[in-house]
Length: 177
Image (tube, rainbow, N blue to C red):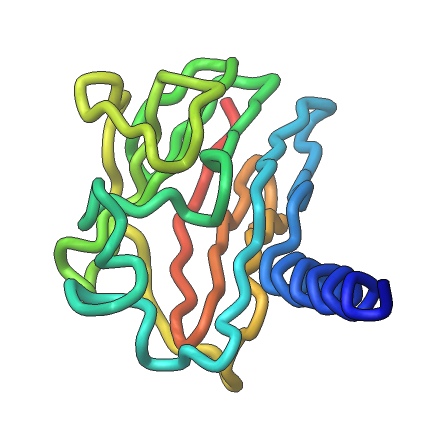
């Protein structure tokens, strides 16, 4: 009986560690002119894999849809907008979408806005793409352990959509119409 309790304790500890790696239910939101823009995502952690995440031989490179990445973990990253948007030159009507990132060129990521919703992060259908836009890339001042989306005001009707993880920060300007 004692060995069963020890085994159960080990399983609980392992499950706790696995849960610590990814934070489900993360939300980034902003209101502009009374209209909400919301991104819902699961945030993976680097978890001692620094320098081993991106690229064909990296952890993300093992995903079936590589070089398209789900921009998070678990379920696909969801975008909801109460307003029509211009995301980096791409017209996005109000509604619900899924966000992916094209990592084909590791120095120039592209944000993919996909019309399909409700899928797991590994279900990607390029035929459902509304479009793709280039993102501005930079390096954070320090390594970013937990992936994070941020929506912040860029003045007037503009918003900065930013994704930061590991040693990458990518952003695109969003205009609310």
